[in-house]
Length: 253
Image 1 (cartoon, rainbow, N blue to C red):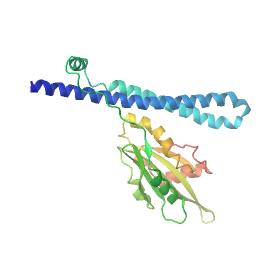
Image 2: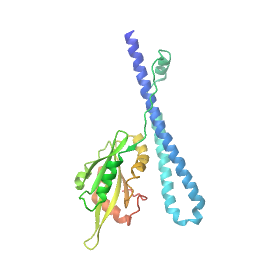
Image 3: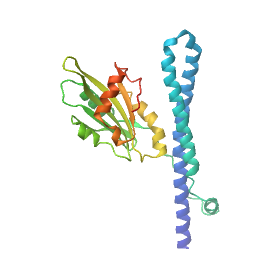
Image 4: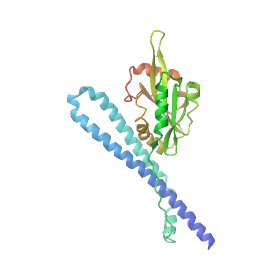
C-alpha cells in the first residue's frame, strides 16, 4: 500500500511540474501577444500617416524590425512548449483514476520587477562627473532586476557576464581627442550563449522595463559572446552613432 501511495505521489508531482511549466510559458506568451498587438497597432497608425510624415520612415523601419523580432520570440516560446511535454498520457490516466484530494494547480507569477532605488542610484552615479564610476551592471535576482555591481575598471566590467545568465550594462566612455574630449553613454544587453529559449524570449520585455529608468544613451548593443565585450568595439560603435538618441537606436556588433 505504501509503495502504491509513493508511486501515486510521484505521478502527481510530475503532473504538477508539467502544469507549472505550461502555465509559465503561456503567461509569457500572453504578455508577448499583448505587446505584439500594441506594436501592430502602432505600425498601422504610422502606415496611415506615412505619406504626411516622411521623417517617420526610419522609426517605422525600427518598429517593423521589432515586430519581426517579437514574432520570432513568440514562435520560439510555442516551439519550446511543444517540445517540453514530459508526462506520458498513461501517467495522467493513472492519476485521474486515483485519489483526487491533491491540488495539482500552482500558478507562478512571472512579472519582472525592479529595485528602482539601487538602479536609479547606479544610473545617476555613472552619469555624474563628480564620481569615478564608469559603469554599472544590472542582473536578475529571482523575478527582480537589481544593480549587482558598479566600478571604473573596464577589465572588471568584462568579468561580470557569464555564459548562463542575462544582464544589462550601462557605461560612460570618454571619446574625442585632446582638442575635444567628451563623455558618451552606452546601454548593453547581455544574453549568454547558454541562456534558455524562454529567457531569451523574455529579454525584450525585461529590457523595456529597465529602460524606463536607464533612458539616456548614445548607442545600444546586444551581445551574446565574451569576445564582443571589447572597449575598442564599444568606442567604434559610439563614433558611428554620432549624437545621443536617448534610447531609440540599436546597433549590433
